[in-house]
Amino acid sequence: MPSLPSLAERYGVRAAVIAGGALYKGVCGSAGMEVVEAEGATGTLNTNLDSKISKAFQTLKTYDLVFLHIKGTDTAAHDKDPLRKATFLESIDSALARNYNPPSEELVICVTGDHTTSSITGEHRGDPVPVLIYGYGVRRDASQRFNEVDAAVGAIGRIRGMDLMNILMDLANRTQKYGE
Image (cartoon, rainbow, N blue to C red):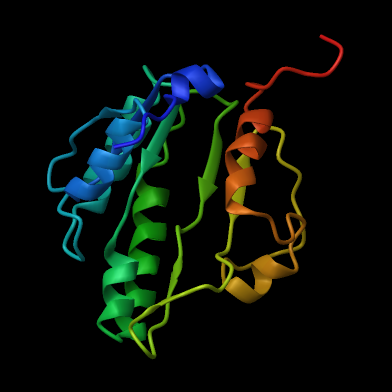
């Protein structure tokens, strides 16, 4: 296994992961993230979203960065069930609204995916994923919906996945500024 710099070494943050699947816990652990368990986190469509989201906000009281992994949308797409995928996305939105409890007004939230999965073919695709960044110091654009089409014309435009952490760390005032 390759030796990866930890997120603490690379960005100076204490990071945690909340996930149901062992794969995500293992990958994040190899990047130096602490695994935090949430009751009912299964990594499936029946995961306890309220528990996971509530635990994420609680964890942010002692960690600088929390990666909350939710697998259900990918599962529904692999099952070629776009209605279930849409319903699950709505469930995530509702659970976030119910459990929104930021530990600081300077919180930055990023909602995105690691890849697209076609609900028609059930296969992973190379299409761009939507990215939503919300929080302190984030400029708003005119986008009203979170989907691939609206995100493509949003203020972020199209970025490379490898640039996302640098953008987030900058918004969270975790990057060194030129001249300092």
